[in-house]
Length: 619
Image 1 (spheres, rainbow, N blue to C red):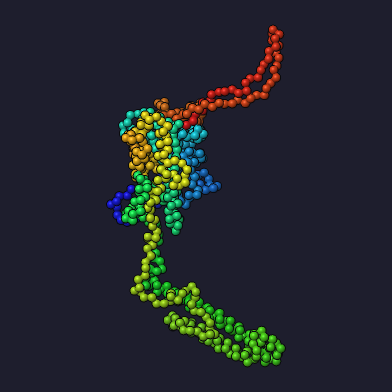
Image 2: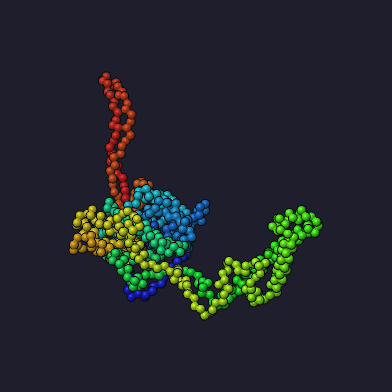
């Protein structure tokens, strides 16, 4: 949460960071000899982190590749034209083209997964044409479906022909890494609260192994919080819909949001105007610095007025010419009617007078005289306009015109006040363009992270994270509950909000018995500790030494793709007994066989159903 000593007005701006394409690294010598080093891949639904598990190499101390787990390819484009991760500098223009290998937190699109593996191996400097000689350490979802693991093993063993594969849970790898850093004894017991991009999980660990039967998932995490923040700000600022993008909302969540220790009490604080002014974050949107029309200088105002006058002159001249042409045509017609009278064609003359709505020849002559005068005046004015200066023309336009002219000088597009002289000393109210392009992010800073504890805020009909934790703890004995809450571990990118640890401690204090003990620990690097934990595990359990947790090619061929070798950070096998019905064969008539002793033996059909125990592995 922001400090109370912060300045009164806090104005921030979006970073709008654009990614740069990853370099193609050379394969380090330490990763080849004496044995190929394992490749550690934290296959996250938001970001993929890849690096080496090689001792004594500086380039192996941190992930070599970090990129978004997305791919963009237009319909009909070739496979080589697919953009992966950091090859996409800005996600927003291609948002409708983005595809991920995940459905929530489970890999289901293995075509995209293969493209990401190609990207990983290419940028690490591994030639994947024949086979990948390095063991692979890969993270997977808690209680990953067997079919998904089978497809992943098939992709790695059949397509890339890797020698060994090890699967583990990202939250448990982070738990493992932080326990090593704190020098805790192995066979740890605790409960892991992991919240990522699509899902949050509660993972109880007893004696160093995951209790898969009591794991629970909450379908609320970072992506739902970002979407919720986007909806809130778009409703609040309908004039800036295009500027409120999902990428910017993720930046707001990471940089400006916090978790309230007491949600309702914190909302009451925001009712105070002083607290609001002190804590609200003003996010400055990019805008053009050009001043609006009401704030232009005197010179620009005079130039605009001159342009308007020139346009009015052109309009006036064009209308005079059109009226002159119409009057000339009417005059020619009337003169033609008068010629009929002079030629003695009285019938045609009277018929023409009726058409002109006139009664006598005198009225016709009077109208001809008026038209001749009007035509002559119009010609004179046109000649005067051609040689007149701008000032003379303005004074002429301001003079009233006669009835014959009938030309309106003022166009409807130019009101009269635009031509009136304005004093340069008049101070007009200025429009603050910068403030108009600011987003005031107030209670949204705490409302979006709150959905992790109250999913009902976004319409999700499920329990929050702490309610689910209480449900999981209720499935254990009081002694086991004490052991679990003595080490509550928070990890995952969505756990990085300020105040998250204090909120979990307050919720635990409310749900646990009076004077009971518990301890909440936050991961050192909640977003990266899963990769570091997988690297630590790979260094301590080398694949060549036959350590547990590795699946060899022989294991894959003998036991199938869904096979899982358990270790301290992996999923667990859950055996289930299923009665497998055998289809009943049609009843056959008994057949009498002649025995050597002459007795008849009747052969009865076998039983129609055989009850067998089939062990199915689920994780």
